[in-house]
Length: 310
Image (cartoon, rainbow, N blue to C red):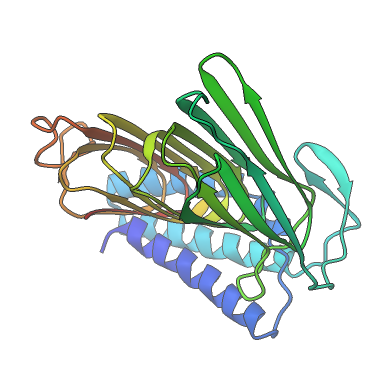
């Protein structure tokens, strides 16, 4: 059995066990106490690469031992209640009392006209939020928000050829697998060519983009679940994903050629229907012959990456 799979399995057991104990209210675990120690996983990844290359059984046991000790320290740190002030987005902010589970409904929209620019850049940022794409709209964009923390804003800027839409969440929002955080239901107009850039900490993203002309999709997140479906309405689509601890699922059409480049530490990879090349990239059998192509770049430390064709 490969060492990286053993270590990845231990990490998943740790995360799943903590989430289960937390959801049954057996323990209180503060994930934000853990994220500040993320460089430890770079050290573990380096140790794993060294010993895995030498294929030493003793080295493998040392790597596993270091990982177990590290997870034990993180478990201890995560059980400690946070201080009154925390670091967030490079600024010190006061903690928010999350005991109140009441939510507030907000609605945002921006109109669309045929005279609007054909290219639209959508920038989405925020943590502790679940994003769901609910299909097309006659407006350029609509967003229905169930807010449990933080503040939301929708701003647009227009130049001669590009419309830029900024949807932001600022402030603190607790993310809990049981209770959830903020919920955002989005709708996008199908006429423009979209570039979508998402930056978030913890949360979920479920975007079916098969009906949209998506030139680029970029995701930069921490502990997140990402599920996207890409269409084939443009000749070229770029997908760039950079994560910390995440579950990433990407669906691509079978008639599009696809190439995947990966930069993953202890992450698991499942690229069904792809061929691994000598340079470490992955390609579909129809990559060279296909007129439409999708380029995927994956970068993650402790994530699960899955790319399937539909």
